[in-house]
Amino acid sequence: MATEPIELHYWPTPNGYKITIMLEELGVPYRVEYVNIGKGDQFEPSFLKIAPNNRMPAIVDPDGPGGEPISIFESGAILQYLGRKYGKFYPTDERTRVEVEQWLFWQVGGLGPMAGQAHHFRQYSPEKLQYAIDRYTNECNRLYGVMNKRLGDREFLAGDYSIADMASFPWVRPYKNQGQDLDEFPNLKRWFDTISKRPAVERALLVGQAEPERAADLATDKDAQKVLFGQRARA
Image (tube, rainbow, N blue to C red; front, side, top):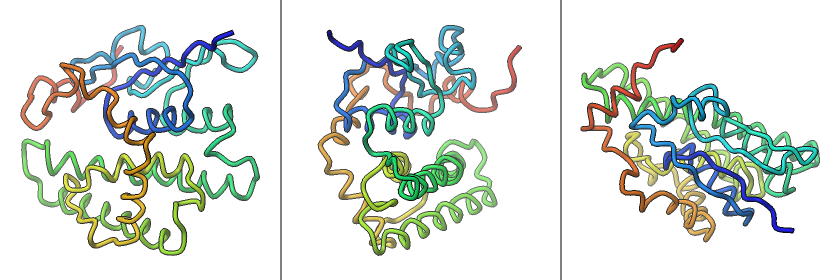
């Protein structure tokens, strides 16, 4: 009996790429539902039912625990769920699992938010606030240094290739927009180049690239900026 595909609610951003990378590495069937974040699809009631934080990615697995469908939001939680379900890229041994979890949480709590803020104030902010640019560019640089040191004596962040690498890699891809130079971080650059060449990663980064409305140029699209930036609580 054929397995129903996992439903991936997605837009091609670093957090979205995390999940396409994992699904491609696992080789499991999935179907993409595009969430055009520049047009406000993330506020649709049908999406909010599975992602109450109005952020993608999210998944719906029709074959969840007990054979019942399950929806999951937050990229780190999705990676952990898929790793547990399929028994790959997320160790079961407690010691090695903790190694992976440390670096996964380091990304979701540090690298992603700080790199995102560096990107925002360098690329999108209508006012060039030098304090904010310096603050987040420097913190991003510090975090790159943490990765570079970590990768000095191992191939991947937690030893073997894992969901920790899948989470961090997409946030290093736009390093130029974050004001960084990978040549300053040779171990990180080696890691980045190694992951870039993985066939599953190459496939994952192509998902959504052919969509005619794939992505607005947020640096110039004022309507998309109004949707994405300055959001407040909604009733």
